[in-house]
Image (cartoon, rainbow, N blue to C red):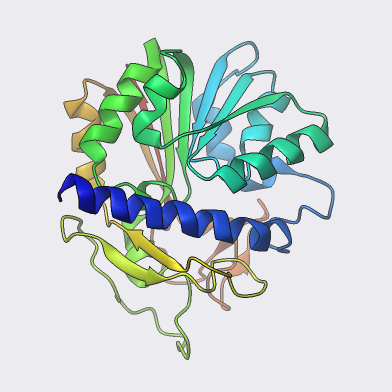
Length: 275
C-alpha cells in the first residue's frame, strides 16, 4: 500500500468515527443514559490476567468513548486513553468528567502514539474489542506498542476472534439462523470496504462520512507481529462469550454476557504479552 493510499483510508475511517460518535452517545448499546458500569465490558479473565492496577500507568489504545478506560482509573490506575477521532476524544472527556473519574485523553493515530505521548512509557497497554481491524500494518503497530511499554510492561489485547469476523460481527440484512462463513479468516487480502451507514449499535443512520475500511488479521499475524517486536507472549485465551447478543439464539450466561448454546466456538480472545 502506498503512503497516499494509506493516508486516504485512515482519513476515511477517522471521519467515519467522528460521524459515529453522536449516534453511539445516544445509543442504548453503550447505556450512557443509565448508571455508568464500565466493568460490564470486561470478561472476568481480563482482570485475572491484568492483576493489580492501583498506582500503575495504563494506556488504552483506540479507546473511542472511553467506556473501558474508566474501569482502569476506578481501579486506581493512572489511565490514559488515545483515539484518532476528535469527536470521540471530546465525548470521552465529557463522560469521564461527568462520572468524576480522572482520565487523560489524547487525540492521535495509534501509529503516532509515541510522539503524541512525548515518549511516555506505561506499565500496561490495553487494546481491543474491535480495534485491530482498523490497522493495516500489525508489525508497525507492535513496534509502537513495544516503545510505549516500560521494560517488564504488559500488553493486553482482548479482541473479537477472527472466526467471529469471518461469520460477520453484525447480522447481514435478511440473515437466517445459520452460521455461515461470509468473510476471510486469514488476513493479507488488503482493505475491505464497509458501508457504515448503520454501525454495530442501535440508533439512526450515520450522517456524513459512511465509508469504512477494515483489515482482517488472523491469529498468526497478531502473534508474529508481537514476537517480531521483541514481546514475549505469556498467555492466550479463547472465549465463547460476547458482551452483546450477536445472534438471537444466544443465551445469557451467569457473567451477564452471551454465548451460543451450540456449537461452542471462539468468539473472543485475550492475549497477554510482556516487554
